[in-house]
Image (cartoon, rainbow, N blue to C red; front, side, top):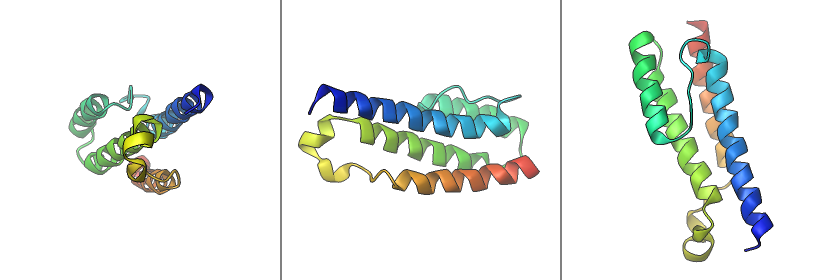
Length: 111
């Protein structure tokens, strides 16, 4: 695999993660910002958000974010090209996660 292709995948992952972070922080960023897309950052945010917003479906948002993070990692993982190319998620599968996240966030922003 060419170095530029690897870099493009990494940049794509960063863009994807930034996209999800921006969506969450547009709703929660003022009082409960999500700092990153690692599982531990998402878990930490979910704990804080759940205690502050008990009526919001934070668990659903958390699960969508973890799934997006996992798929972004698989998309950028160059070793999968050699060993398990069939495990790489299709890029359009992330679009569905974005739609689901927008739905979950819209409920929170109207609550």
